[in-house]
Image (cartoon, rainbow over all chains, first blue to last red; front, top):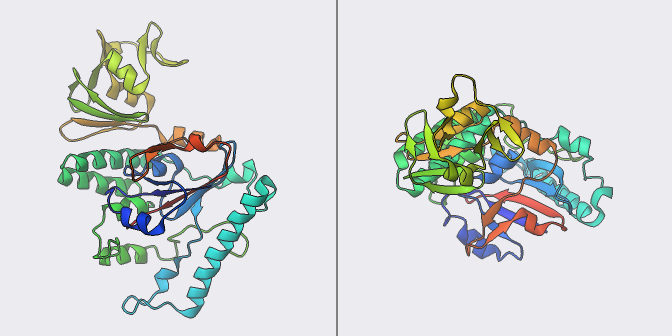
Length: 207
Length: 137
């Protein structure tokens, strides 16, 4: 089964998307980014595969996302054909892998052994643990109307956990479409240089 | 009134005294929010006990109160607070988070759906779960 979790601190924000999707599975709202704290999630869409016994089969990884958007023409929003092809390919390969696991369980080539799963776990440093605690603190302050102080804590959380796009984008301003994709977002993406926006996914053929 | 966020939820603590470094909390409230309590062998949560540091006992336990901030520092866990000290978050260390993940037991959580109904991951034990995050932003 699918459990979809919106990492949205403003709880009204994901509602139009959920209404439009008419999901047949639970869609939950994670205002405090608890999943980031518990699972080491740093970006969306990241997914975790969990078996019938509640064991992690694949740790957090980008769910079929390819960072082709970095090569998009930022004026026309056009994507080079080759990049568009890789984006489609990443999604298709990932969906096939999920279906294979749904059918075959631990016999699936995409189900990690315990040893493989451990090798793919994120490392949670003390700075990251503190950053996630500050993020929760900030969300509670926002609910109480103490936005100025909250924003300072979110900036501090982002400083302590610079790899978290969840913290940074949640704290960033949004466009008229509700996307945290203003010029400062693109500057931050460009500063990545050769570093990936979505971590590589360990599935053969994944771009 | 101090609001405390812990792993188990949100608590409104009455009778709590705060400073920039201390969170003195009546023992019964400390236990309800964190599971920690004072025993003859020190401060304990379940089977785990931490002895009080010699000569500094009164910095952690005093009368019927526990200084949760000092306990968290002693445990090496994040204890963060608002500037006025009216909101605190006591959470778990990176070391513990990392160890919990290394067990490969998927950490349980409780989150609401749009109607406000709470769902726990453990409610769906017995089924494969594809847990996927997304966001409006």
